[in-house]
Structure formats: C-alpha cells, structure tokens
Length: 69
Image (cartoon, rainbow, N blue to C red):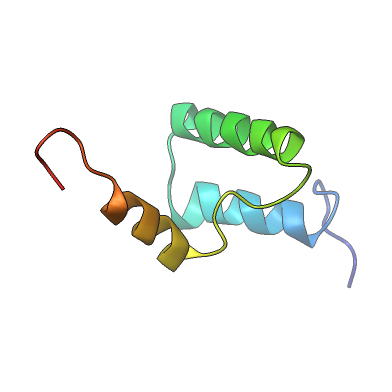
C-alpha cells in the first residue's frame, strides 16, 4: 500500500526508521547528517558522496594524518 501515514513516502519512512529505531542516532548527529547530505546534494548536483560502504572505507583508510596512516 502507499499509505505511509505521517510520512510522504517509503523513502522518508525508511530513513526515519533507520535513524531513530535501528541506529538509535542522537538528534545532534541526525542534524549533522542531514546538513551534510543536503549540502552535498546541492554542491554535487545530486551525485552521491560515497557509492557504498567500501568506497567510504577506502577513502578513510587512504587518508594519512601526520605520521599515522
């Protein structure tokens, strides 16, 4: 069914369910995530920052800080 009650669609419901119930993300972190997400959509014309978790981890693991890698 397409009845998501207070949500506009499945995507909105799915994100809310993930952030609130599954990840139990605190409000400050949700705010930060949504700010970064919105900014990236505007700056990158809708392209994704990371294509998947492997892409994210690759970038993190490739980063060196001072002598630490």
